[in-house]
Length: 109
Image (spheres, rainbow, N blue to C red):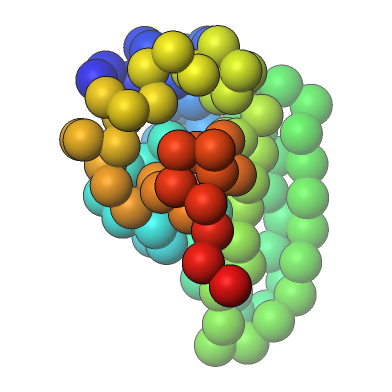
């Protein structure tokens, strides 16, 4: 599965990824960068601005990480992935916990 199947605007997505790379972003869920929060290390006051749109945020902290999710706004609607869910899970089984797969694998309580 390629990024183009999951992201609505690859140019925007890649620009945001490159921009956050300057801050030392890490990826919380796995190597799969289109899913999960992106973690930005925080030391003092940080202001972020997407180079492709008007998204802006600021936060303050010391020795911690701030979870970014702006890239999730760039994903294709989950409903359009429904027909491909089983194939997605074969490639990335860690997605099993996401609600879009709930009727395939009910969440454990």
